[in-house]
Length: 241
Ligand code: TMP
Image 1 (tube, protein in one colour):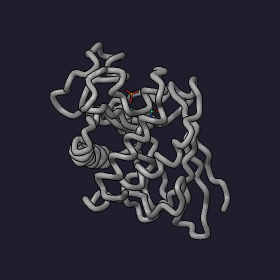
Image 2: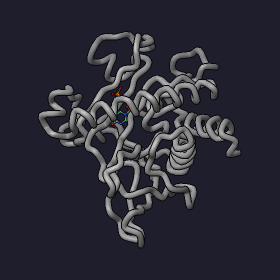
Image 3: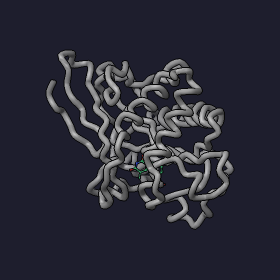
Image 4: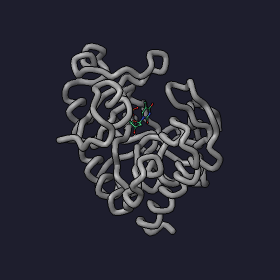
């Protein structure tokens, strides 16, 4: 095994099969384009388990993902893909940068799910792209954009319903996609409390209800406990434990 790439939250290793990579989830956490750093003990295992469970479940709903299996607590075997350098964000409720950039009040239910495309480029601070800028940069064709938008909306439908069954509101989330050697578009990266905003429906207090990385971003404390709460509910609902 050779280290292929180390990112902020994961390390990717090659395997003996060029079509298969091994992802190792780290406990490291960053926010605001790495200006804030920390460690959440146990996060790697938690995010690997949640992501694996959700990818497997989405596969059962005919969403193509890079997930193969989870050989160890913090390791996921995945199909090798070339990552499309676009972060696809879907929002159901106003929060985060949408509030900062538009003045919408946090917690406002959006009249339709908003799909946004960001350039995956840390040096540029992952800027929000217009559709025309996307086409201009030749990051995707018009057809691929439509495909990304429609898969993202479908995933939003599935995940919103699933998290609701765990008494969790899916506020927004970020997806990444990749192309395999045959050119198939696969859902990649991870789906976890690092990449979603998740609010506990049983807790009314606005700070206490946060079950995701916003606890780290805004120093709300009890980060690990929140991640564990999501893990427990997701795995229980899927009958994994
Ligand atoms: P934002 O409100 O900060 O733009 O974030 C929207 C969603 O995307 C939120 O669920 C967090 C997730 N996200 C990531 O997964 N990675 C990132 O680098 C950023 C900025 C957001």
